Length: 98
View 1 (cartoon, helix red, strand yellow):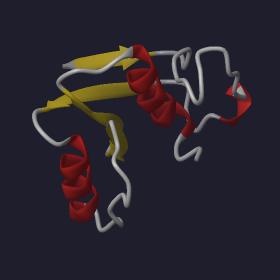
View 2 (tube, rainbow, N blue to C red; view 1 turned 30 degrees about the vertical axis):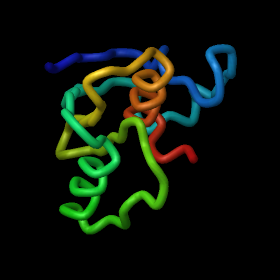
View 3 (cartoon, rainbow, N blue to C red; view 1 turned 90 degrees about the vertical axis):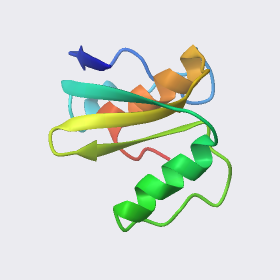
């Protein structure tokens, strides 16, 4: 599934009412590709990170994202919620903010 987003309105950190600084985004326009991953999402994210030469997560994750060429790829389990998906969309616009 591909989604072209033109503004970074989504993206939750610790809760739906937390604000973040829109002036510190790495981009305000992105093509987002969502990969629905069956099974263990932490394992899938760690495989993706290893293939990019990055260190694996040392804790369980519910989703992950990275930039590949000119698009942001989100890897997410077969079931999710707005907080998890919004958090990853925030990464697509703000980069590594934590």
